[in-house]
Length: 118
Image 1 (cartoon, helix red, strand yellow):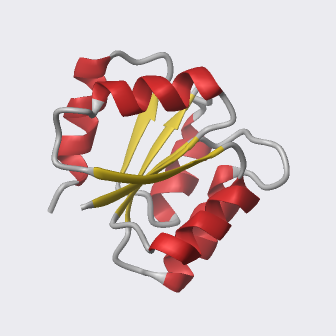
Image 2 (tube, one colour; image 1 turned 180 degrees about the vertical axis):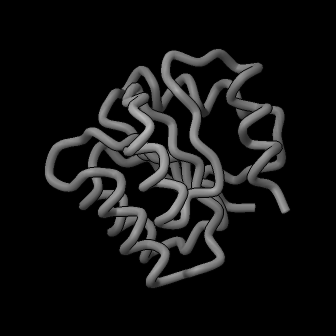
């Protein structure tokens, strides 16, 4: 199971990788914005993506929509500090499988990942 981690914070990307180290994922890349994420996505075609929303260059919602055009069965977990209901509804309606509010710990992240596993 290939996983792409997308967040503009190096600290958050590292934390996600650390929290998921005992899960059966091959982390194929980390991206700091939506444009980098799309480039890595096209190269590796991951099965799973953790996606921030607020990022430079291209936001996470736009990047997610582009990814799902390329590989519609990708399972995307939005992990964002944005907690307004309209954004959450838009993310889920656009194809995200689950929405996790920041800040989160390893336990919350693993529980959210379990919800997007088939």
